[in-house]
Length: 251
Figure (spheres, rainbow, N blue to C red):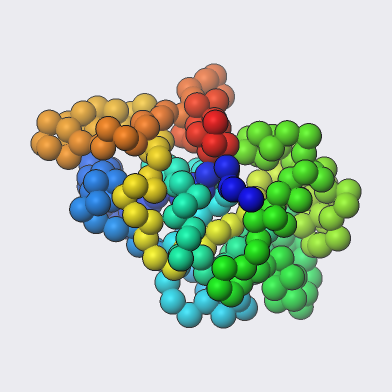
């Protein structure tokens, strides 16, 4: 069964680096002059706890299936599914750190139940057969897989795990569900090859910086699509937009 939905990695540099430096590093990664590396997480305690529960002993690169999440970075990298071959550490049916740290709506999971819930929602080991499970969940939860890519709340009526309990809880006025409650996480043991990068997603403000770097000789490879998020009355959304959804969905 061939995977069509792409992986998303929201890139974020060390806070001490400028936006120009961040883009220069990303372009170097796309050109094969540098490699994507595992990074220090924003929520160190939560991610450390998740990795302990899942017996992750070496740094991994976190990606989401069909999703770029703006809380994790401002430069989006869309990866071909082929990058998984020989690099898969494991897969979890949600944000593993969010569950381990009981962040957001995961707060409705009892602390004592977290380790068992995280293991239940994860598949690990050499080449775990996770993709048929993902396809089956999408078929039962969406009328169209494109809705998953857009972040639509799934039909979780058949789910028996803690995600369903968390999704069903009432929200405070003005709050929305964080799609990391149900978006599948894929962890890679080593960096993707340069050929695995299909697209880069930038803010419109980054365009001038990219053009300046191009003049300096740091140009984005021609075979990597350059996409931009949307600007509306509601604000700037780095990773939202039909062009981004289409590439993430494999269209």
